[in-house]
Structures are given as C-alpha cells and as structure tokens.
Amino acid sequence: MNVKKRIALIGVLVIFIFISLMTGAVNFDKYLEDKENDVTNPDIDIIEAWSDFNKDYILFNVKVLGKINNNCTYTFTVTNGKEEVGLTYTNKKAFCSLENTVEYEIKDNNTLTLKIPSNLFKSWKKFDFNVMATDKRGEWDYMSSFKDMMLDDPAQKEPTDKNIKIKITYVKYEIKRVEKGKWYARYLIKGITNGVDHVSLNFVTYYNNGSFKKEKWIRGPITIYNESFLGTEINVFYFNSTKRNWKEWKFEVEAKYPVNESKFKWTNQKKEIKKYSIIARAYRDAGEKYWSQAVYDTKPVFTKEGVYYIPKKSPDFSLSLLIFCYLLLQSIKKLKA
Image (cartoon, rainbow, N blue to C red):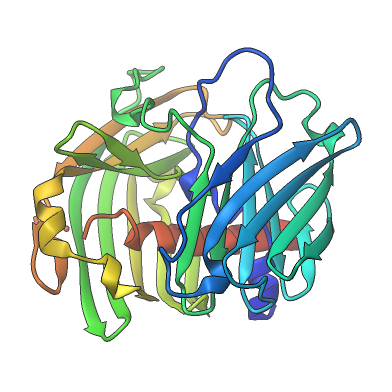
C-alpha cells in the first residue's frame, strides 16, 4: 500500500483523544480558532475549524492560512469519550473510519469541508473533535475542542481485579538528534504478569504546575518492522508477550522522525517537567472489564541534544508521533482484514 493511501486511512489522531466530561444536551456545533504563523508551512497552518449540524449531515470544516494542499493530510477525530470516528483528506480523496468514502469540498482554496451523515452520531450523548494538518516533512498543526482533557489521570484509577498481578521490571529510553531536522528515539520496556489476556500501555507527562498529559492507550499485541512514511522511519514497533499469556512481555520502539527543531528546547523543558510515568495495565479478559495496573515513574535527564532515562525528551511529541504512525498502520490492517 502506497504512502498516500496509508496517510489517508483513519484513526490517526487518537493519540490526542481525552474523555470529555461535558454534560447536558449534545452540542454538535463547535468553533475553534488558532493564531497565525505558529508553524512554518502556511498550508498546514490551521486558523479556524468548526462543525455544522443539520438533521441529515454534519459538516467538518478547516481553514488554513495558505491553501489546501493535496500533498498534505487533514484529519478530524470525533469522539464521545468512548467511541471515535476518523475523517481524513489527502491527495484529492476523503476517507472515514465508518464509511469507505466521504464527500468533500474545497472553497476559496483555503477551506476544506468534509460531509458525513449525522445519523452516525444519533446515539451520542457527548461530542467533541480535534483536527490536525500534517505535511510530508512531519510538521503539523493541531486544535481541539476538548476542555477537560487533564481530568482523567490513568495512574489514579482503581483496579477492578486485584488478583491480577503486573509489574514493570525494566525501563530505558533515549531521544537524541542524529542529523539536522531528524531525531532518533528508542524505548525498551519489560514487565511480568501472573497470566492475562493482554497488556496495554500509557505514557503520562506530569508538569511542575500540577497539570499532566497522557497518551492514547496502546493495546498489545503489535508487531511492525521497517515501515517508513510521513518522514518517519520505524525500524521496530513491537509490543507483545515473550512468555505465554503475557507472563513476560516487552515493548520496544526504534525509529527516526522529523522534527521542527525550533519547537525543541530541551533544557527549558527540564524546568517544566516533574516526572514521566509509564502505566502498564493487565487485562484478564478481551473486553477489558477486569484489570490491574503498575506505574513506573521516571525522571528524565535532559541534555542539549536530547533526553534519556537509563536503569528519558519529554514524550509530548516524539512518542506521540511514533504512536501516531503506529495507529495509522493499525487502521490499515483493520481495513485490509
């Protein structure tokens, strides 16, 4: 499957999905705006995004400072806190995670509209979306309607089955500059359980101001080798049991990825970040009703060239992009199945 097709297939923004706590009547009309020139490529510089609802359709609109570029990718991820729907446009084609195609229109060269039947959301009690624009270099711009995304710390959740035993036994990570505009990332995490159906991982950055940022849960098993797209070269993305029933397991990532280096000021982030935690959650059942978890806290070591933790950059972007790439591949595999 070619690069453009990979990019177009949906589900790519779930890294940024957080549970919305909004209550009351469902508001399907959302409006977002962003400042201009916060990225270098005007064709992905999002300045407005909004949704319009009527009884037959919901329209998702994004306006950029430059023009809608067929060599770029524009993606909406819509959620009710539990379900997600992905909409993606690239290379004169639009895709939806629930439909093979979706109608689109480009107005004034700078505004993209994606049209999807509103009955897909008829049972939803909540509604939010985020939007991302990405170019081939890996530079991106992003906006979200989520207001309460810092209210759900997975490390504080109470296990539903304390008979499940899980432990993280080893953590090592390193992110460093290998060439201008290109960074290298390697993660190695190992653990043990007393035998479960599967394990999922999350990564949470805690800041000194009391806030935190979590990632999308990554559910094993995953095995990806030697994939390359969006400027990212993935040598390995492996998360699987190494001893029957996840009694021993391993998460390993090794990749190079593009970076807008003006956004990376490692020594400044040292003052902002309190800790970086890995959360491993073991599930006894495939439906994920019964689980317990382990939390492994790390204190990243910052240098001028990157960050590390040995037995740590902040995962804010580097691991997010790698998970972003992994989710693209997972979407492709599901659609091919």
